[in-house]
Length: 449
Image 1 (cartoon, rainbow, N blue to C red):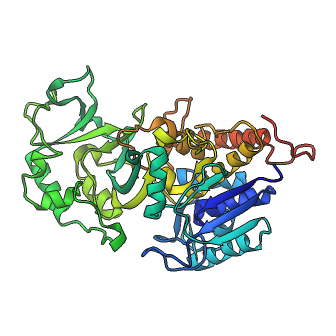
Image 2 (cartoon, rainbow, N blue to C red):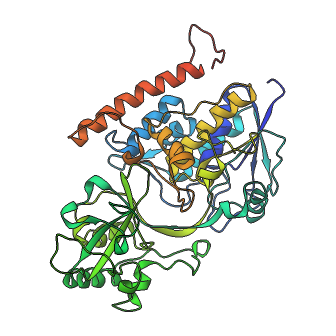
Image 3 (tube, one colour):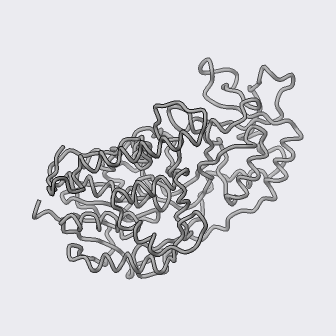
């Protein structure tokens, strides 16, 4: 162990978290970062942990999945999240930061750590013989991505997000929905949840959709033509959606006397069907407009959107085929993938991915069994989802939400369920820390399995 050096490629949120954890555990780290010599069009700062988009790390309310995730990571000892707390600015119940101060303070921590060797260079090839955490983010250099393709398969790398919104099943009004496949093909219940629209409902939805506010994409976010935003499709004509994703042909709810004028279809996002995505609803609408416009669909009037649609440049891998639940490549155990490149979505999710990758890299180089967190915790659920639960045929990145957290107790009240999940998560984190011996027990820091 004493001679082990771990390479961490990328000094973003996940990479810095990984490097700081390993260095503080006495491991020598080579931290490779292409800035300031090379920058993408999205990056402006020379320092590490630059927040490219929003300065918000979302809610701190423990009744939200984002709040639960933060508590978990702080309990696990996240260094980057601690810095974020110190650099916070007033934002109600959310954790928002002074992004320049945040970046400067994380950079300072990295540079002051004697176990971290900073290498300012662009990495284009992976050395499979050396323990390495790749945390290069959603704008991974093309040459490095192409090199990664050689080991995991070209079809398992993606360069764009074209993500439809996801809603929770229990927030859908089932009085306005029915299960079924087109022409009743493929099973007794059917694979799709169908949301019928009358002509008046379709017309109102159409008019609001074509006039809704969209996100102005930056040069590095231009999308490919093979996947058209739903609002662009709508602008090509009133009937276009009805001959596309909202086609009503072959779908009929026996409770209705008239055939629907249009039908929105939802498909299961996870195995137990607690999450569903809106088929064909890739969109560039702002999040606020997605909530407003898509809630005009009768069955979605009270829908809980746990992820909104996006269409932008985002490099990530097909995690269900490539990674285990500790973010280690299945075929190349020296290599771990952390952060958004692994298929997690969001700032805090990336921090958590970097931390769990580093914990398991530490165990790996010490010849200990890897230890995933259970999916009854938020961070464990995210990593389990991207590696095990998600479909490899239409995989898209995932963020923190209650729909993917396992809960073996039934609750009628949502608040009671969330409180139970929170309390159970804290117990599981304590067990994890003790078993990993990442905290001192009887003044001993030996690792055990």
